[in-house]
Image (tube, rainbow, N blue to C red; front, side):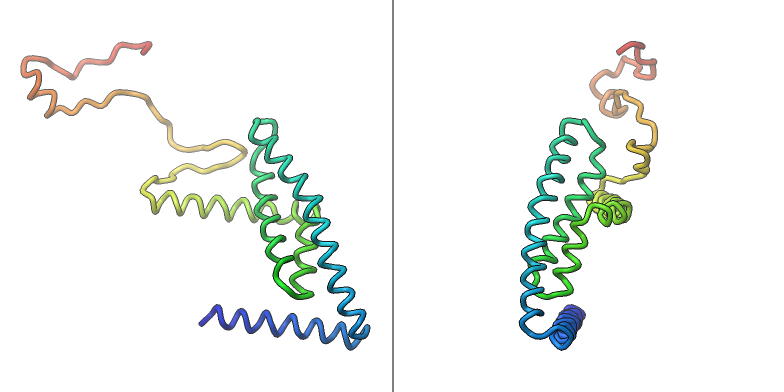
Length: 171
């Protein structure tokens, strides 16, 4: 039911914006501006898409920090959806989302949202995320490599052996 209300609000806002533009500029200009904004958005999408995917390629080669290109690709996906959805308001929002300065402003929020969703997904999967991702590194608990010996299994197989000795260093 909430989705239905959001869709109704979307239709109402888009119709109001188009009617206001048509009354102010005329119907022909309103249609022309709507189509021009969509074409401008698609051209910007192609241009910015190349830049973002180039940065993703650089991130896969460890040349740059991957947080910015990943956030930009999420914002690019959002801009694409906004450009595909018909309407003046969503088209303008999609074009604005493609502007590099606005993406740079939205990037920290997207990174924080992505980190929170990843931690939630890991928690649901049983992989408990106890550390924090900050400054390009994972600051979690210390991990000590070692070998776990099940005492009951060791006692059954080797009744005359003691397994409480220290492991040799340098392994």
